[in-house]
Length: 347
Image (cartoon, rainbow, N blue to C red):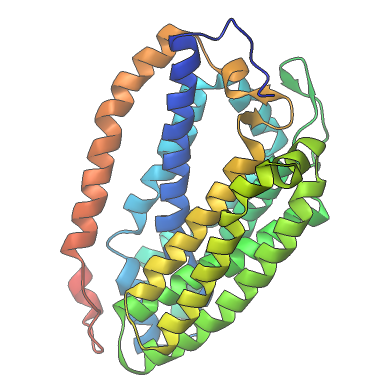
């Protein structure tokens, strides 16, 4: 079923499994905590110029660059321990990844220039917005291409340059824009007050509807991308074990809506994170143990056991430090942004 034989025993079995879990954690952390600041950027130009936009940007300015550390951990870990997968995935996804990185550079520059600019502030507002939007859409298309799978020959990518660009990947791109928009709106609900908070609640409801529709379309589409995925979700008795995932997802969506209507500040954001984690769980159910769907498993793509052990020592130091720094940064900058913040105080 999983595509590995008796040669994968002991450390050869457990180390790739541990590393798959660590990389999944890094990706999940990136999606959740960088997702909301990209979501703030997606909302940005729809917000009222001046005070609203200042407060939105100030809510993420102290933490956005630390959030992207998790992207580096995920990409670096993939290269260090699953180099075969890295060698296949990078050529297959080269264009959307480059597009994402360029967009992230533009929005990163906008953080610094916008606070100092006067006449050109609208330029940096748009750089922040479109950088966030394009980066999110590119990430969604990467996700869609990954779920669809890749053409391989031996241990190399044999497909075309634009294989990633399909109706399904466009749909996942739109879905991720809606999802990040939901995270960004609920973040603003939690971090702001007054009219901006009320506006953010309205936007959170709109993006929640978009997220639910996108998740429904993608979830209905995914099982028909490959027989192995269809078997995971619809065969008996598998259906008994996976049924709680869509049921929990529907429940969490309802709780987000109710928390927004009830005037809760923190609950909508935390529940939106739970919604993303449930989507991540559904993805794991569909694809595990493939790291290059639909052929290459984590065991087949893993580097030598000694290399995995060596890299694990570094990760054992770096990951806890990154977790600690992330937690500390969020604790220091907790609370709501004042309605009349002094933007210069950040610098």
